[in-house]
Image 1 (tube, rainbow, N blue to C red):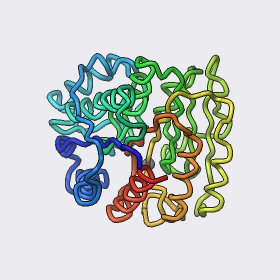
Image 2: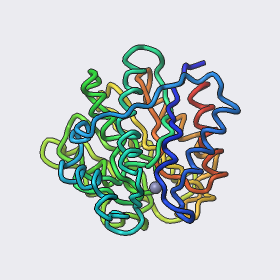
Image 3: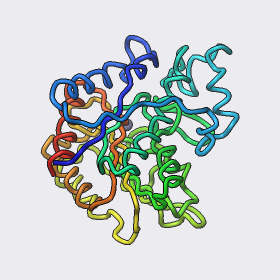
Length: 305
Ligand SMILES: [Zn+2]
């Protein structure tokens, strides 16, 4: 049995996206209910409200400042109207992103080697100079930088969300200390990034790997993609952008990945991780029933495999 860390804060519900938005508070609240009912043994990792300056490790100052003062200046969304800015959105997004530091401390203090971060808003679409796609600040990118500060110099990021994590790719595109591996549906948001030919630039060339896939992908085809996880990147920690919008009951994609397929993928990731610390950060997943079942399988696997 593994000692698995768990991070959640009821304040994540204060990011108010409105009544009809698919990225809503019921996602994280439903996952937390599952944990309260079934996973009493998880090690609680406390949330944390860091300084906004910490965000500058991955975001541009002007952007952070714009979001901080956005609501008061009448801003109600970023670029396309899908990314909502409510009164408390800056506070919540700052808290979600900077809380990830406590999960690094959980690893560094030897309390456990696996963790699940039930975060809101999600982060992998947030680029250096802007948020988008329901994401305000890039949680996993900031966590990668915290990891490096704590001595985990080489960071492996695996992104299985059905959408390409353009933000994470953007932040580490020239960096050879963070490897970004993404599987995603080709004909889906954000459309313009995530091509196979995007492999990084300069020193970072060869440290980004995109595996876009066809519509209606099945378990077998999907699992084959993970054979391309890099075997020669000597990582110190693995961070996973856990987007459960790839599951077959999700309306946001055509992917046909089943719960069995998800379980097989999780085992591949944990085998690849070996004895290094690994954290799963919630990204997408909008069908609540499918989302909760997917996280249930994830937590079960993190405990027992
Ligand atoms: Zn997604």
